[in-house]
Length: 432
View 1 (cartoon, rainbow, N blue to C red):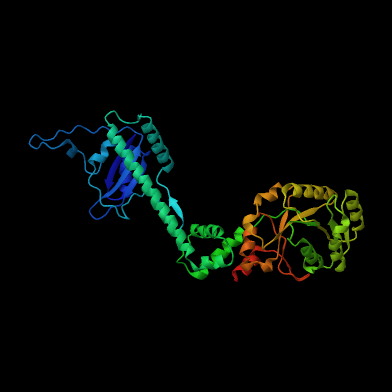
View 2: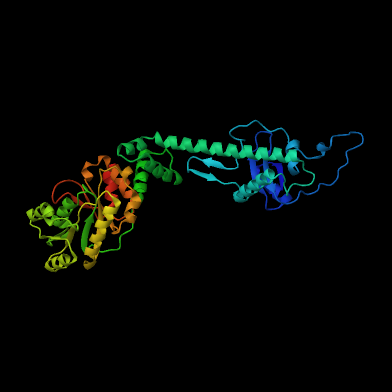
């Protein structure tokens, strides 16, 4: 293993000279651009053995030290650090730059052959801990190896510190931007905002760009974040499930009376009663649907479901209301297992999980939906009119990868229900 320092008129010229002398497998450790009368300097590492320099005998009349025979700026082996010319003072331009960070695009430019460099440095450190270095030339002293490894460690620490400072500086620039503060007022969390603005930075946007340009770019990025794949199921029968207070019943009343979803077809409603409960406890829900002149039936067993489906054949669509999901996971699992058995006689079915958009997103376990015995195919948001800035609703939509067929935008029946569109949502949220 050999580490060499080579100078040239430019970094590219020095790198070409290194490859001419040492082959194409050199790994670039450090590059310092030319400054004034100082030539550009690079430090490289190679697995190839060091070429033997032809013996050069100093003149008899001038007994010069042996080091004078080595051209200035070129080192050989691990002892190269002792023979290098004095380095210029550290500045922003000539500091160690094995990986340079660009705050504009948020990405780091990796050095040439960086993976091999990291592997080589790790191997050298491992060999030093074991007390030997198989790649060290017989003439290299242990002190020179330790000194060279100390320099490498210093360079790595400098790179890490500079990249950390650059990342923090870029983050602070976005956080101080008026658009960032505006989205905070719309109830988007800093974690979600950082992701959105990071994507803008990756596309080349900067905080100094035109405000209107940044606003539209952020709107497009938010629009993409709200996209969800379609469920692939036809909504022949709509089943709403969800916790207490989600607003399933009011949402079903709006859907049944809205001509925007089912035209002038007359909907029929089934109310599922949990096993072991008295059906009379659900008379209030049944009476509410009857008050709006909707055909409604309460079902608790598979036989009752079959008879109810037979009576509802002349109605379309069929809407199914379910009891609130208990907070206890085991109780919720038992209830959904019963509902799943009752739905086996109904096809096709779209199960829609209903969420109150005003509820705290932080307390919801997203993986909870994947563990349900009856997995939802879609997501519906209610109480959207009570959500400040719609940022909280956006958090739900970004976290749950489910299509959204409709949202409840207010309390009025049947008008305050809308077909969801990410474009419509972003335009309303950002007031575009």
